[in-house]
Image 1 (cartoon, rainbow, N blue to C red):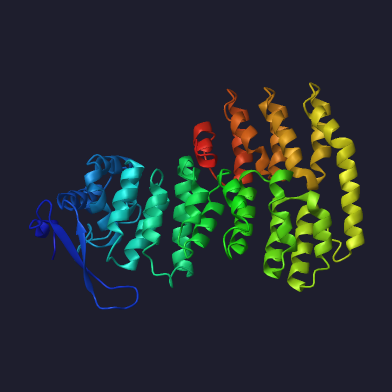
Image 2: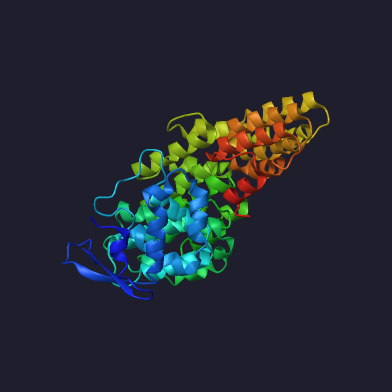
Length: 448
């Protein structure tokens, strides 16, 4: 039976080799992982089941992280299986409820400087290494990537066989890793548009979808500025923009939408379809006439998309009846132009009963839910906990991300009940489950 002691022949600074098989079934090759092997020995000793028993994950992770950046590649080698980890032949696996060594290693890497982790992992996943090693590298970036993560991601994904990139088991880890990197590093958006334009064409769809999933509003202008500029990328850009807007701001300014609306009349029916769906997801009620016109598009799939978008905006269904749709929108828009400003003022009223009544009236017109959310969330900044709770209940039903900035401010309240109401509403809008802690929510949603 192998034991940790059987690895004592490894000396500091040597090169470890592990037999691997390429994903394409080629013959096994020797993969060289260069690092100080003492860290493999130390990690395996700490991660042995008898050493982990009764310990807390954070404490073990802190111990491993304490060895510093020189240990990063050793930890990654264990995670990726290019060297033996604590589970050697004949060793017992952890009992139910005990710590999982891979979880501990990930937690240790998360405690280290992100730029160091990104650089070491990129180096370890480059060159003649198995495909699986690069996928593990993506998972590490997903967990801990931040500063320097975009460069590391680009280096790693650039070495993946182009034929594998469209496959779901490759796309998923790669897109999630990039989304996590961008979510943790707001500086990564600086110059991102230019960097994207210089990437290999095979990587651009992955990058665009990763930005779309990153939950950072800084990505919206990056994506919209690329519309029509990258060959064959509009089919990926349009849904990515819609996804990002849905998760961050809820809607877009009329000026920004001028970049997107023309694509609903594109000569390619696929682009028209994606643009129509995007306008519905973004909540662009000002484009209702364009969507009604698309009900008569020559392509049946575009017609169906237009009907879906109109239903998404209005919450009612007039099927393909263009006249009925137009009448409904004109009625709603006339109501908003008459009452929108008044309701916003009344919501700010010092009279609680008037404010609550106005909130309910505004919220009843779902076409303007993002405008309503921006007005209603101001109630959450009051000191009257009952008023705040009523506002939060309505915002939970509206589920508009436009309320997120105000709710983050409400988490700073000294009143615990107000903080809890804001937390519950943020959870309803975002799907995240965090404690009523302002900094934690701010990190999760805006990266600050």
